[in-house]
Image: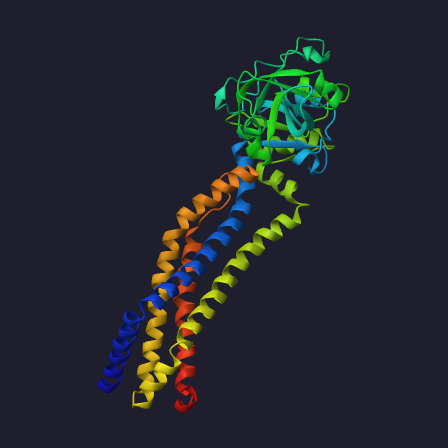
Amino acid sequence: MRRLLTRIRGGLALSTAQLRHHRLRLGLAIVGVALAVLAVTLLAGAGIGVLETGTQQFESADRDLWVTAGETRITSAGGGGFENSLYDSRSVAAEMEAHDGVRNAAPLAFETVYVATSPDAEFRTIVATGVPGSGASVTITDGESLSGDPHYAGGTYDGERTNEILIDEETARQLDVGVGDTLYVGGSLASARNNEMTVVGISPTFEQLLGTPTITVPLSELHAVTGETVFEPATFITITLEDDADAEAVQRDLEASYPEYEIRTNQEQLEAVLQEQVLILAAAGTLVVLAIGAGIALTLTLLSLVVAQQRKTLAALRAIGLSPLVTSVAVIWQGVTIGLLGGLLGLALTPPAVALLNRLGGAVVGFDDLVRTATWVSLAGLLIAVGIGTLAAAIAGWRVGRTPVLEDL
C-alpha cells in the first residue's frame, strides 16, 4: 500500500511538472475544452429555447382559451403569420362573450398587407394584426394605443376611420419611421397607395407572438383595406375568463355549444400551431443531442491529442525505469486538471455568449431570449469536460503504458 501511494504521489508530481513546463499546451487544451463545453451549453440552450419560446409567447398573451375553425396553419406569405379560417368572427365572439364565466371574447385576424412610407416608395409585405376596440391587451412602449374601432359601427362599416396604426421596433427601423409618421397600407398595391395611416405607437406584442415584423390596426379597418368586410374572417377568437370561472368547465360548455369550432387552452393551442411544424421540433431536439455529442467528441479528441504529444517523453521516463502506474497517474491527472479548468472556463463564458446570441437572435428573428441556459445543461457540460476528459486521458495513458518503449522512441 505504501509503495502504491508513493507511486501515485510520484504520478501527481510528474503531472504537475508537465503542466507547468508546457504552459502554452495547457492553455490551449483548457481553451479547447472550454469550447467543447460552450458547444454543449449554447447548442442545447438553443434547442431548449426553441421548445420554450412558443409556450412563453402564448402564456404572455394573457388569454385563457383560444377558438379556431379547424387547424391553425402557419403561412409563409409576407414573412409569416396564420391563415384566417374563422368566418363571421364578430358575431361568434359576441355570442361567446355572453356565455357564463366569459369576461371578454375578441377576434384576432392576421393578414399580409403592403406597407410603404409614400405612394411612390417601394412597398413591403408585412403581417398586419387586426384587433377589435382599442386593443387593451396590446403593450405600448412608446406613443399611445389605438383609440378604438368606430369604423365597424355595429357591422355597417360606415363609421369614421381612425387611420391609426401601431408598429414594432423592427418595422420602425426597417421603414425609418416613428410615432407621428405616415404609412400607406393596403391588401393590394392599389388600395395601399390610397390608404394613409398614422403611426400612433410602438408595440412589441404581436412581433413577439409571431416572430416577424408586425403592424397592428383596428380590426374593421384591416377588413376594409383587405376587402374582407363581408365574411369578417379571423385567425382566433381569444377568450378571457372571469377570475372565479372554472376554465375546464367553460371550455366544455363552449365545446358543447359550438361543436364546429376547436376550443383550446394556451398549451393545447401551442401544440396545435406546432403540430404540422415537425421540422421545428425535430431541429430543437437534434440541437440538444448534437450539442452533447459534439461536446463528447471534441473532449475525447482533444485529450487524446494532448497525451499523444507526450508519448516520447513518457517513453523516455519508462526507459529509465519509471513505473507504468506513475505515467498513467500523471496522464489521468492531466485529464482531470484540463477538464476541470476548461469546464469552469466554459461555464464562465456561457452567460456572455448567451447574451450575445440572444441579442443577435432578437435582431434577426424577432425573439428575445431564444438561447436559454438550464442547470442540467451546465452540469452536463461540466460532467463531459471532467468525466470524458479523464476517461480519454485514462484510455490514452493505458495505451501508452502497453506500447513497447522502443516503439514510442
